[in-house]
Image (cartoon, rainbow, N blue to C red):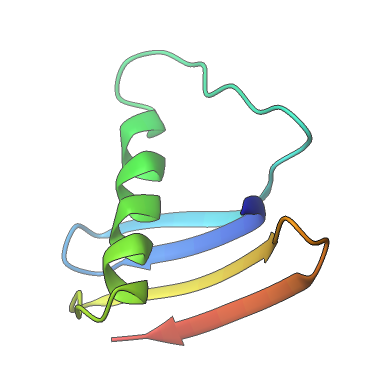
Length: 78
């Protein structure tokens, strides 16, 4: 799976990731405290949700493609 774009809100942490697009190769670079780890945690939260868990206080929109080239958009909220 390749993530094409992500938008994520975590109300418990009062943290919001505006719509961001990921190109062919994406490297998260920045100063301490700007949100690199939060982006990774958001992706891990979505992994938990996809596995059947609930993560309260979050909303998301993610677009991704599969290995066979199919494109999908998944959005939801808890």
